[in-house]
Length: 382
Ligand SMILES: Cc1ncc(COP(=O)(O)O)c(C=O)c1O
Image 1 (cartoon, rainbow, N blue to C red):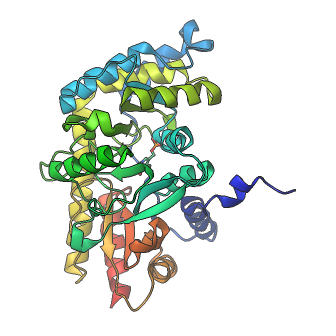
Image 2 (image 1 turned 90 degrees about the vertical axis):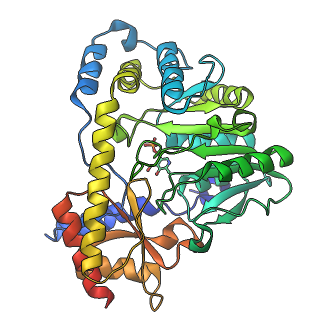
Image 3 (image 1 turned 135 degrees about the vertical axis):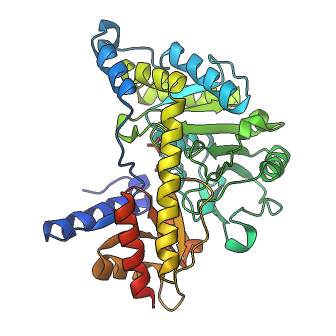
C-alpha cells in the first residue's frame, strides 16, 4: 500500500537505526557501551515519583482533563521562568503544555509553515526539527554550525521569506552555549524578516563550569520574536514521562494550542501534577544531575586526553562533540567504533552534512564505562 507523500518525505530516523544496531550486538553477547542516544540513565528523583503515585489515585485525573493542560502546571512554569530566567509570563496566554518537547518541535512547523516556506534549522542539529519541516512541506535551509564560528550560525545572512528559524543552546550535538549577544542579533534579524524564532532550551539546566544558559525570552524583544521549548526529560531524568512546555509569543502559543486541541487531549493529569511538583521543588536534584554530567564529561575527556585524543570540552548539554580524523567519514568512524571498540557513538553526519569530521557521544553511562569507551575509541584512531 502506498503512503501519503508526507510519509515518503520523512527523513531516515537516525536514533531508531542506532538502537537497532546496539540491540543486534547485545543479542550476539557483545557488551556495547551505548553512547549513541541521549537517553538519561539515572532514575527520576523519588519525590517526583511519589507525587505521581499520589496523583494517580485522584479521580480528577482519571477522566479527560482540559485539552490545554492543567492551569496549575502553567502557573508553576511561570514561577519557574521567573526564578530561573527572570522572565514574566502570563500562564493563560503565553504557555502551552507539551507531551514531551519533541512533539512541540514538530507541531510548530505544522502551525506556522505553508508548503514551500523557508525554515532555518541548525546543521548539525537535532533531527526532529527536520521531521516537522518535512511534514509541513516546508523548505529546509540548513544553518551551518562550524568550529570556526564557535558553532553559532551566521545570522547576518538571513534568507528572505523565512517563516521559522530553529535555535538550540546549550546545543545538541555540539555542546556549545550561545552568548546573549548572539541571541540579541538573532532576535533583531528575526523581527526584521518576520521570522518566528523557535529556541530549544532542552539542556538549559545542564551547563558546566559555572556557566548559565540564556533564555531567548529573557532578551529584549525575545517574546516578540518567538517561543522557547523546555523539557523535563533531561533536568529531572523524566524522558519516559513525556512532559515539556513551550512559552513566549502569545499569538504563536495560541496557534500551537489550537493545533493541539485537534491532535491530543493533553498529557495525563497525574504526570502534569508530578511535573508541577518537579518544577517547584527540585533545585537540589537538578544540581545533582548537572554535577553528574560534568563529572562524566571530565572523566571522558581526561581518559581521551591521556590516550592522545584531544577533544574540546562541552560547555553544556549531555553530549561531547568529538573530532575524528578526516581520512575516514564520520559514518565510517562510527561503524568502526561499534565493530572494533564495542562503543556506539552517533556519526556527526546523522545531524546534518556539517557534522562531518565528528562523532557525538552521550554522557549516559557510568564514569568507568565512559573512561573505557574513551580509551577504546582513542586506541583505533591511531
Ligand atoms: C535538542 C533536543 N530537543 C528536544 C529533545 C526532545 O526531548 P523530549 O521530547 O524528551 O522532551 C531532545 C531529546 O533528546 C533534544 O536533544
